[in-house]
Length: 390
Image: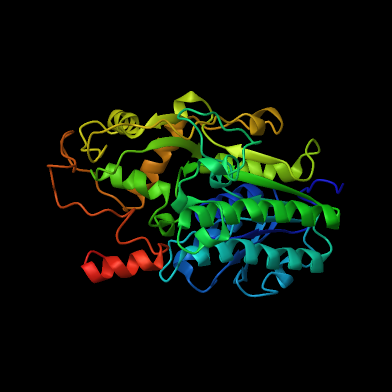
């Protein structure tokens, strides 16, 4: 098994470096003194990348930007050459214009295969950390089921609804299955390739990631940090059970895994609530925000109804094996909200009851779901367009 990475062992690479998680990985690596090669779609779009250069100027490490399109074969060859470690945070989420469930699947698995081709070509990579998802962990189960790192999304497939069956045929029309399947299959592929190449790869499976935004560009549709912003502005959403993890903990766990001599190829880490306080219904999160920002109209549940307690999972392995000291849930919520306010990305409303829900339309628009989700069943999209509801 190859040795862990270290700051004086050569460059490290972060894919998807301009993203919410990727940016925090870059920041932690720079603070540890690493030479970081940050892979982004277009270094020239400064609104998306200037914060990475600023992080590099803080030192003691450094940041250099590389133009990389994960859908292009060989895109990472230059960035990986001579590097000791790779943090693969780039992903096709399905929230970009023109996306489909099939593109979500292909953008995960096929892109990961091309990434591993670049790892093979480099011949210098010792550690690879793959940002997977809790979607690769959660499987059909009774309410309140406790998920662990041994859980995989393809377990208990017989309990899936027909429209969400675990099959490639379903991938073409169901984004949730496409995303879960591509993340799980990519994990397994990475571990197998790492074993073949004699290096160590690890999977990071985060759930509802929130925390401080390092760039205004991190306020993106269908990202949990943006949904916190909706609540601050008084927008009521459908009921949800949150399993909150801090983006800083997600990023630090990746670096700790790459630096550890206690883990082995194929180990995965659930990045979930640090304790029971991070498992909450939306109305509980609303109450926390109301306490942090008294007198403001904080959004809660759009309408009343039955609540469902899932997914349930509490962080353990990252703490016991890697020594992570996670942020408190209150700090994660507070720092997420404060950063949105500091960037001027959201505005609060005076009056605690001044928030939008069923029967109380205040004309507030959602930044989390501003339009129809791009990666939906093409047939469903055509139907909605024909009905004039898309």
